[in-house]
Length: 382
Image 1: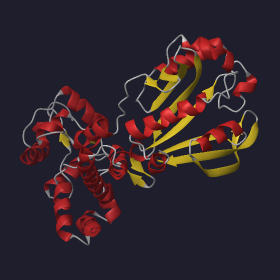
Image 2 (image 1 turned 45 degrees about the horizontal axis):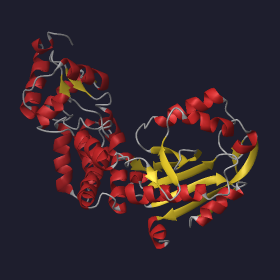
Image 3 (image 1 turned 60 degrees about the horizontal axis):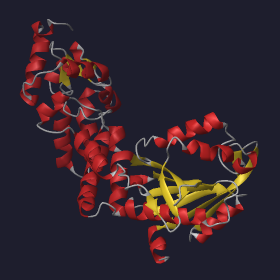
Image 4 (image 1 turned 135 degrees about the vertical axis):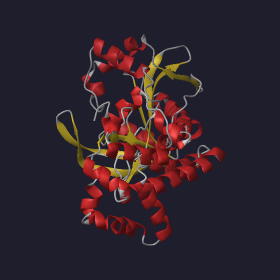
């Protein structure tokens, strides 16, 4: 609307109503840019309905006075069959709790549901449920950060699960202005960013890990030399996901594995105590609340049959269950990989799945196995 927006009596009246609800706080250039990205200017017809208490007030008022609303600001009225029917249509979503419905209607009309990407009764109810789940989960996890139910509940609340959107998908980023008008951290900061940082961000252990004969440590640039021969072999790579690689490609693989990323993929070199590299192992943290891990391993050509893979895998299982607090670890492998299947069984893992012809690898369809081990099963193994 431009710098003279407030010279329009309708705009000025809407702005006054907005300030009465939200307080008079400054909008920075960054706030304005954010609002222009996610919202649109209100039409005169919409502003008339706002002042009549029939449509929500603006979500924001820009520094130049322009009232801004969601792009679908009037869509709910259309779904309801007209603005006259909107209130009854809205309240029907809380038919079992009319008092809460009235509160939510008032909150909706205030225009303050700026946290949601989509402002609908369904999304409002989802947001309320996910915040309640996050709050309950944080209370549990403050007592025990590895509690599997708490981790699962927080994972659902923050990231969502099948058919249940999490807060990360439901919420907009919001702005510094929102911290002023709501008097504290935004909903995203409080129920997504903070719990994710505290409970869903992996903390690496102190490296290296030591076993009776082995050292497990992060990758280093010089490790490319040790892996180059193995990765050049078609026979050695035949049951792995990747095709053979030349020395430069192996160097790039090592460089990528040196990058910790978000901490959910832990790639480790397996070496003897004298520093001889014998293979590698990995643990990929995944699942709801990062409560599941996938384990994998390789032993370089000529070094198999000495128990290195078993010894290293046991150390990685311990890392997953004790340090990262996993409740379940799985191993997925080509069904033709008899040696890895035997290793899974030595580790006490159960073959849960045998898929037939599900896996396309190196020009052929093959089957696959999934082995698994729960935390309580691992503990029972001693």
